Image (cartoon, rainbow, N blue to C red):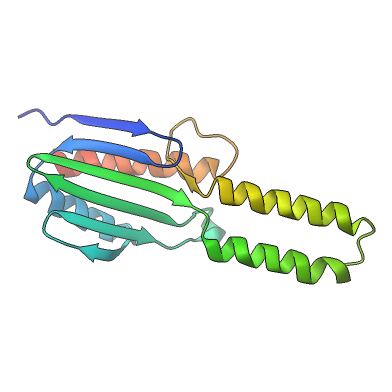
Length: 155
């Protein structure tokens, strides 16, 4: 039986579909747990996982949603900027900038608000191999890793 894998990078998330049954889903679950993912919810044919950030290793938080319908396994996965980080950045900008001794506080507030708006607008990131700018290396690395894990699980 040929196992077909298709991957679509949709800007905010990556969607991968593969053929496989319950055994392949269990293999994928086990492989993800070995990569330090934590199970958020688990049902017979659905699984939600998350992975915490390791910023010293240039690794961002990640979420994965796995669904199985018949002989199709669908994964949706993305890296993201947590709301707590965005809120902390904005709070720090408003609390620390007035006392930082910067001459153009208004310009700094504007730049901080622009950075926060960009982070909110681009909160989720797909894992495309030709990713650029925000989270470039982790997106490329996780795209390759997820493709390899899915191929191995469905082989």
